[in-house]
View 1 (cartoon, rainbow, N blue to C red):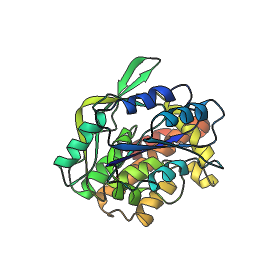
View 2: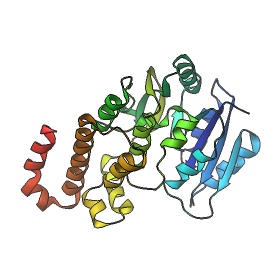
View 3: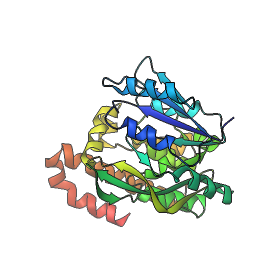
View 4: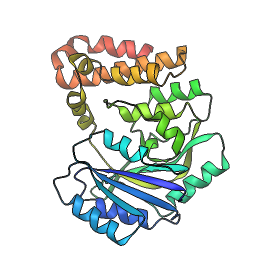
Length: 286
């Protein structure tokens, strides 16, 4: 039984997949297995994944019979039966000591549930920025949740090494917009998050406005468009049962208002021109 399971949900990752797989293969910590799960790719992702798995027995390839969307993350996570787990997107890559350093940090901190290094964002081979979404969260559960929810940022912390049981319990039961924020927030119910000071992971830069487009794709109703984090909020409060404190409620309210502002500014500019100043003022007060 290896110590670490790595889950890689794939969808049209042919351009970057070989680089991603090679960087995992080159890790100084090799006691892992990787599940590659394709979610209906239309490029050469399947061919690359199958060929790679055929030459390294630690890599297993699965092709989903129907598109799971965010459920593909749930699939690879639920398949894990090891002590530790890592989500590995098909367009990211890691320095050779990434996994080893994260596991060492968890071994040295029994109260921690996740560990991640700092992360660099890259566009066409050029560094664009350093992630703001990996900061350490070392306080109480309520303090950590409030701090995280006030600025989930790019949520790169989701791609650190987690204790598997906590990760499986934290993952939301239903697909929804910002499911990754739900996951990271819910893991804080089980322990703290460690940030290593070295940047040992690279992620491809995704334009911010692309995420706003996902609101319309993921929304189950008009209300979910207007309040994009409604489902996330319900999942945290009623499914995961996070502590209901003034801190957490204010942080949730601020996050909901900020995402509402972003959506209305993108898709309803007249509304935004009329009420944006008021919404910004309310958000500032929260």
